[in-house]
Image (cartoon, rainbow, N blue to C red; front, side, top):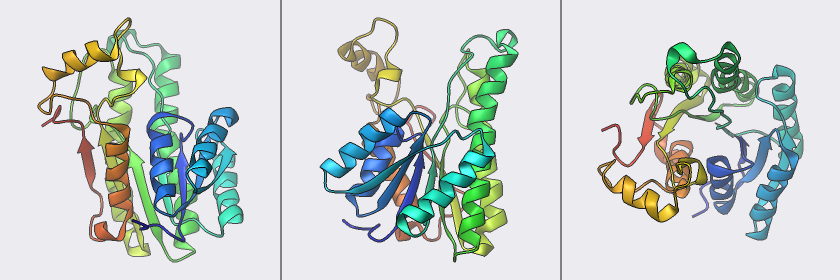
Length: 252
């Protein structure tokens, strides 16, 4: 499939994990991909993988907590590839994994600044370009933790991702009449190193997960990426303000 040939796609947090999988998936379907994040070396690894597979990509360093850097990121995306058609706001952080009353102010501020304000700032600059150039598509990466599911010792993260889900819906209503279609994907834990408990092997994780969610396995990063590509594609042309959960049934 080449659903995104001729399109420019910006992916934040593209240096590893889900962001890398999303960047690779868009490039495989013909998009020119701007891989953005804070660490140049990991972004270059992503770009190398895209190019090795025959795709087109460029790495641009940017911190989503810095409005000026995000404005420059959008400008650089347009300069490199001639426009910005699709933006995937994936950058996020997890800190303060203790009971809510024990979260430090530093951790609380860092999580909200990156996960909520970072998404809003990115959208602010993406939307400014899109509204002046005939529209576009934004997909925000939220989480099944937040609006859909709660667990102990993750209050800052849960609060931030619930806010992303709400922000996505609000922005979708505000900007659909400008031709900008905004949705979210809310993944659960995926088959990546982050989901391993201390000292746990992949085989041990697989056994544990069998009894923890209805599907009996974790989602693959590529399965989450497929949901993002669907929402960004013309097939989802009537999907506005949706929050698509991809978590193996954990929050069903």
